Amino acid sequence: MNDVNNFNNNWRLAVRIIFLLLAIILIFLFLQKITWIISLVLMAVLIVYSLSPLSNFLTKKGFPHILSVLLVYLLFLFSVILFFYLLIPTVILEMGTLARFLATDYRALFTNAIAQLDTFLNNETLEQTLLQLMQDIPSTLQSTVATLTNISGNIFSRLSETIIILFLVFYLLKDMDSIRQGIIRIFPIKWQKEVNLILEIIDCKVGKYLRGNLLRCFAVGLLVGITLKTLGMPFSFMLAILAGVLNIIAYIGPYLAAIPAVLLALTPNTPHPLLIIALYVLIEAIDAFLLSPFLLGKAVDLTPFSVIMSLLIGGQLFGFLGILLALPVTATLKAILQHYYFREDFKQPADGERGLPALKSKCKSVSLKIFNKIKNKP
Image (cartoon, rainbow, N blue to C red; front, side):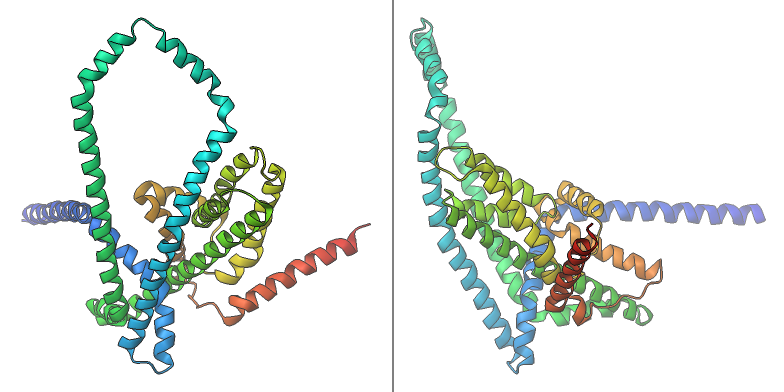
């Protein structure tokens, strides 16, 4: 009798395991099918995290919630339109200048290519080559039309994605509190306090990181653009945009942004390469010692190794979106692990641990270290 009961129990356990594995596989396949939708929602959520403090500020000042959302949303739309209105003509102008610059400064590099072209034109097989090209014209035209069709489809797809994201941003900004409360109510009452705590951790880590990083990258791009323009560096606008965008990638991004500027400085009529290197090192120091403590505070409390590994894994899994989310997600997981595994209470950063007090404290600490070194120097 016991053998029969054991057999039945084992059979039920095996069936449950099989159904659990099937459910996991089905969920994984389902998530793969809706990856496009998930990426759009994530982009909209990231934008909402950046805009929600301003909307909440207006609401606290007595504005109706819907009016606050409308004002912030219209300001966001105006900023996006103004950005591209100023960006696109300037980029096109500098791209044209870049083409002329390369043609002027690198003309000597084409001497060997011209000599090879002259040898080719004097070759007896030129006629056969031309005939072959004439025969390939139909297939070439067909592939060109297919390429243009793909480009047009990609442009239409990106435009539709942008419109969807804009709609999602508005409704998420309007109903963020309701969505948060709805997520909490899904869980049993005994779990709701813990779910609320996890959402607070996500708000703290993700929200503060995104807003601070956006301002930090803008400040770095602005500093690079102004200083390069002052030094007479060509294409300072494009280099400034590159510096601001790549500064999202912690530790690695600033050095990647410096490479094109240093290579460009090797050409005639440009500032000395050592001056450009010193400039980027100085701006990176300002970013590390002033901007990051002031704008990020303790939103991301990770070691350099953890940062680099998170960026590599995030970029490999989800591309640019993964790089953008890698650090706040890792910081969130670390905070949750510390709270539940190491039993450390999660606390919001105090006023003295972020913002201007954090900047003053950091400057005071650095000043004291320098003073002590000078004092102790024999």
